[in-house]
Length: 564
Image 1 (tube, rainbow, N blue to C red):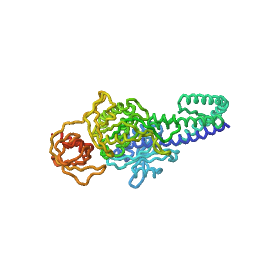
Image 2: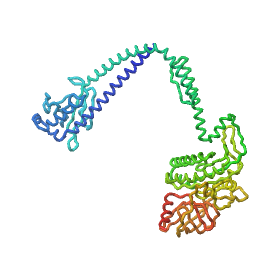
Image 3: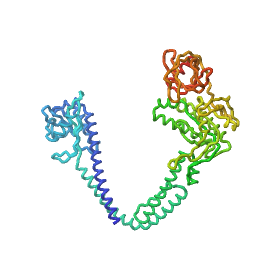
Image 4: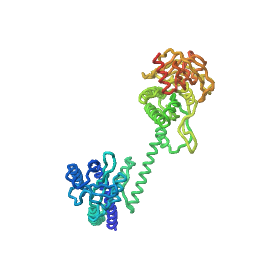
C-alpha cells in the first residue's frame, strides 16, 4: 500500500508538472516570437519596403538587405523556422513581398488567401498578433504578425514569423516517457523504504530524547518533526504541545517584563499568590514632562509624533534602568520613576538625582539627532508611600500611593525649561551636589508653601545652563492668560523689551511666578508671530520662558535676535 500510494502521488504530481511545463513553454515561445517579430518589424525601413512593388525589385540592394534581416532571425532564433513580409492593398487583398531565403516560389505581389483575419487584425489595430495553431497545407504552425511602419507612422506591411508547432507534441511525449520511468523507480524505492521503516522508528525515539534534553537546557523553541499516526506520532504531538506551552509562558514572562519592572515580575512569579495590598516604603519619586510637545504633535501629525515619542521614551528608559530606577508609569510624554520600590537601595536619592541629570544630558543628544528643541522639567521628592498591588481582582498594577507622588508632580509643573527642582527631603541625602538658591511656591492642595532648590550638578556632572544673552528690542504684542488647558477670552497689550532664543522680557500685565500665557508678537516689519506659549520665570522684571512655538515662529524670533 505504501508503494502504490507513493507511486500514485508521484504520477499525479508528474502529470500536473508536465502540463504546467508545456503551458509555460507555450507562453515562453509566444513571448519570444512576439519580441522577435516586433524587433524585426522595427528594424525594416517602412518607406523602402513600400517601394517593393514588382518582381524586378528583387535585384535591388535594399531588397537584399531586407532578405538578410529576415534570414538572420531564422538563423539566430532557435524556435523560428520561416520569416517573411507581406502587404495589404487598398481593395483588401494581401500579397507576398519578401521571404528570408529570397527563393520563394511566390513572386513579389503573389496573392495570399489564408490567415486574412489575423493579418487584418494586426494591420488595422497596428499591433502584434499571435496564433498558436495556424493551419495551412504544410502543417500546424505558431505564427506571429507585426506591423511595419513608414516614417510617417502608418502601417505599410506586416512581418510574419513562423515556428513549427508539432515540436511541442514531441516534447510532451518525451516528458511523459521520463515520468513513467520515474514512477517505476519510485515504486521500487517505496518498497525499500518500507524495509527500513523499522529503523526509522528507533530514530524517532532518539529524536525525542535529544529534544527533551534541549528543553531541559532552556531551549523552548525545540520541536520534533515526526509525522505518523501511531503511538510515536501521538507522543511527538504531545511533546510539541508541551514545548509550545513552555515557550509561550516564557514569552509572556519576557513581554510582561516590558510593561512592569522585572523585579516586580520576579516577585509575582515567586509569590504565585497575587493579592491586592501594599506596604509603607521610603521612596524617591522623579516626575518628568516634556515642554511644548503638544504643539509639536500638531505639526508632526499622529504617526510621526508617536514614532518620535517612542524613540524619546526608549532613550530615557535606558537611562533610568542604568541607574537602578523603576519606570512606574508613562503619562503621555511624562514619566513617573521610582527609586526604592520595589527594590530599595541605601542611596536611592543620590541615584535619582544622578539619573535626572543624565536624562537631561541624554535629551541634549536626542535633540541633536532628531533636530528638535525639546525641553524637560523634572520634579523630585522623597517620602513615605504605600507601594504594592493596586486595583481590583480583575485588573491590578504595581504602583505607589502617597503625598510624595503628588508633590513631585507639583514641583515638576513649577519647573521652567530644562530644570531639576527637588525638596529638602531629597537634597539633604545628596553628596557632591551643587544646588541653586531656595525657591518658594504654593502648590495646589497644600496650605503651607514648599521650598525647593534646583539641582545644578552632582558628582561633577552639570545640568546644561539655561541662561542666555538677551538683546534689546521694542516689539508690540498681545498676551492671554491660561487657566488649565483653556485660554482667556480677553487679551492684554504687552511690549517686548528683551528677546532671546527661549526667553523674553515684557512690560505690561502683572503675573505670578510660573503662570502660563499665550502671546502674539508683531515684528518690526509688520509680520505677526502667533501662538507663542510661555511660562513666567521671573516677576521682576517680567521674564517669560518660551515653552511651545512653531518652527516658523522660532525661526522668525531667532532672526530678530540675530539682527539685533
